[in-house]
Image 1 (spheres, rainbow, N blue to C red):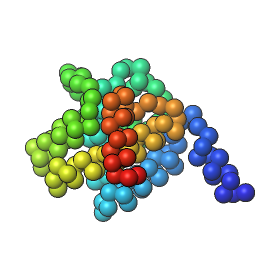
Image 2: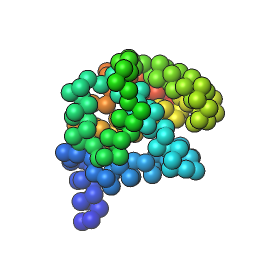
Image 3: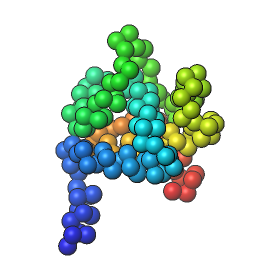
Image 4: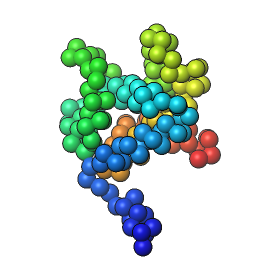
Length: 157
């Protein structure tokens, strides 16, 4: 019975992402990325969300903020600048290249290579998409969603 209950909870859409789901999200991501530090995992999610934030409308941001726990609010708005250019990220290669170049410039060392950046960013984007989808949120535009699906098929996932 307990197993059935958890299966139903996974299938049934919820109205907002709980703190427990957020913690599970970061734990799973840390394990899949083979990161030794949760801090590094959070930093990676923060920079990915910062790139995505520029492509969200005000209405999308309100909806995301209303359905996510406070840790995501902090990650979404951290390092937000009023004069920030709104540049929609349309393609997977754009976000990977941009994050890889930023990482090289800042010297944070999140990525060992551009290939490492591709793998890590793709994984983070898939996890964000899955988490957002669980509460009925559209995480990305159609093109990026489609490219992530193609990448998963090419990897045989």
